[in-house]
Image (cartoon, rainbow, N blue to C red; front, top):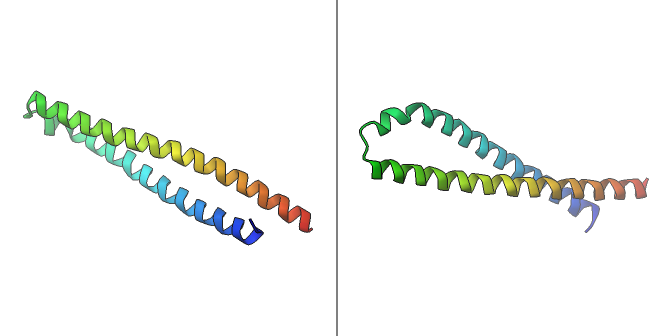
Length: 93
């Protein structure tokens, strides 16, 4: 992989990571907002409705946790690419 390709890959990964961080931030803000409204929503719900809502929330949380894991792997990959780029730059100097 050339220096330019690595630099482009790093930029692409940074953008992807930035997008994921934005989504996670929105998700946690949404969780915070929803938890404040849960009582009003659930007070007239059936037990089955509550269970369904909780399961739906758990599925969403599981997907976000997987997103966090992927983000962690992306960060590790980005760190490795940045090291390789630095090594190439040092060799050229």
